[in-house]
Image (tube, rainbow, N blue to C red; front, top):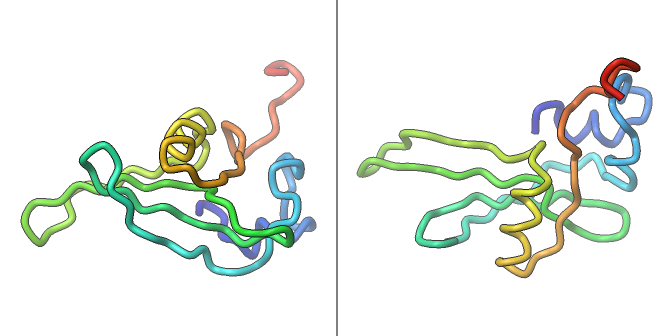
Length: 107
């Protein structure tokens, strides 16, 4: 969601990113569906891959009447994705914990 699906699907544009997380991604806009989970609404983002769709992001939304008051995006949070997708019984793929490769000092 941060870089867009076209960037994820183009290996030449993944400079600094770990390509292992973006294997088989197709340059299509994610399909988004609302799901009720533990009493709150989530937006589940389905990304197309050459071997089928998988959830790569979840957004939590909060409303006040007919107004959207907060959106929290979970894209680089594999633990959150794993837990929620297991409870929803949907396939997911990890994006890792960050959008850059760790430096030698961090590794």
